[in-house]
Image (cartoon, rainbow, N blue to C red):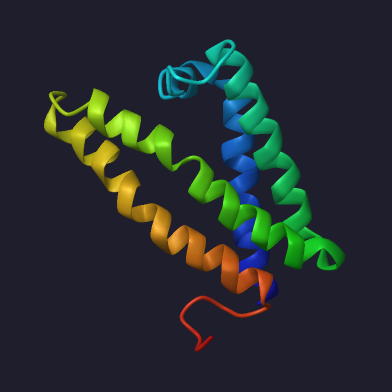
Length: 125
């Protein structure tokens, strides 16, 4: 189970770091309906991903971190929908990436919930 939690923490940490290292792709999927600058939302979501990664990595905060990760994966879903809509006329490879992100949220949420309960993905809940 520790490997599953650390894997989730690594995924969140890498994604959070990318929000700062290469913010432009993230800026482009911030829904226009959100107030403020897209870059501010990119940095804020990156900071949240890094904080959640740390929470998942630490045994004392893993339960809360797993729940926060599940909520985060649900919360970023509108950005994934925006990407799919924006890329609907893009070349096939880009469309596949955009459309593939949508159902990917389901196993990510389930993974985070299992980590919060101390269960490995695929085990009976």
